[in-house]
Each structure stands twice: as C-alpha cells, then as structure tokens.
Length: 218
Ligand code: C5P
Image (cartoon, rainbow, N blue to C red):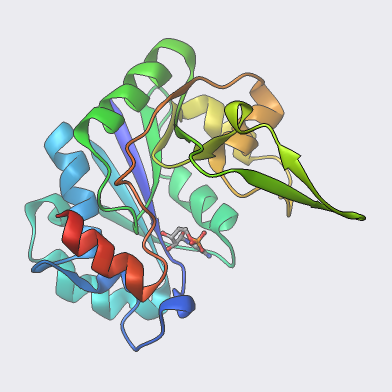
C-alpha cells in the first residue's frame, strides 16, 4: 500500500500575512489542495496523513471540504519543529507500506517525480528526488570561503519516500539539530540512499515571490 505524510504544521512566518502559506490561494485552489491532489491523482487509494498546527485547524476545515483528495485524509497535530511533525505523522502509518514524506508547500511536484520516488523505495528502501546544481557554490570557512565541486552536489526535494518500517525505526532515534530532511534521518540508521531525478518546478513556497512564480508555472 502507498501512504503519504504531508507536513503542514509550520507557522510560515517568512511569508507574512494572517493566512499561513499552505492555505493561500494558488490559481483558484489552496496550495495544500494542489499538493494533495497530485498524490491522489498518482494513486486514488493512497493513505494520506496531514500534519497540522492546532492553530491552523480553522483554515484546514474550511479548505478540506473543497476537494475529494482532502476529504479522506487523517489529521494529526504537529510539533515544535519539522522532525517532531514527521514523527507524529509516521505514527499513523502501518508497517509494510511505501510512505512518502512531503512538504505541503511543494504543490508543483510532478507525477513523474512521485512515480520515480515510490518505485525506488519499493525496490531499495528509499527514493529521494534531487536536482543537479546550476549555480557555482561556495562554502563559508573560518578564513573566508572555498569553492565546492558543483558536479558532486545535488539539491534535495520532497517527497522523500521509504519503506515505512525503516523510516519509522530511524525516527525513533534522538533528534539531531543538524538534520533538515528525512533522508538524513534514514541514512543515519540504514546507510545508503537511492537518489532519483526530481523536477525543477517542484519549488518550496516560502516567500511571496515563490507564490507568484508557482502561479506563472501553472
Ligand atoms: O520550515 P520549512 O520551510 O522547512 O518547512 C517545510 C515543511 O515542514 C512545511 O510544509 C511546513 O509546514 C512543515 N513543518 C511542520 N512542522 C514544523 C515546521 C515545519 O510540519 N514544526
């Protein structure tokens, strides 16, 4: 069975304004509805858990009745940071599933990316969407900065997809401040990851200009 944890419990303060970014309108639909519909389209039987902030329940209740993809979702409250929110969501996912963990604020994930990630996780335990770097990159050091070899670097997106019992056991470990994604949590316990191609439009909506860009892409 395919399953999905959508993390939507962030406060989204960087965007400003009274409505959290996952509930803002994007071409006639809330951002989170676009996100849920992409996965529902990939597999209408997928089990979806949405992780919400308690204070956002009113936004969710208003939004979720507008789409079939949202109506069947289970809801759980999130935590202080993304790590805790993912862990809360994973508690509702049974063993024996292939489970994706996806940022609610990435509505432009493609069907192809979703398929590549779920297939890789089914075969190897994990499927992580990445993109090559187009810019040159530098690392800040004690003395200034140094160039990093671009060909060896990748940008990491979501959904990050895993065999459910493997990612759940990894999330039972202690929280590390340095961890910013699920792949790193998995890797710390189970070792090597399978990387697959993401899609460049799969941006994380963080600032107001990202919403304008997403609107243009749609
Ligand atoms: O803050 P950041 O941009 O990394 O958030 C990525 C995703 O994680 C967002 O969808 C956000 O709602 C979610 N999140 C969460 N719980 C938190 C912090 C972030 O579900 N405490």
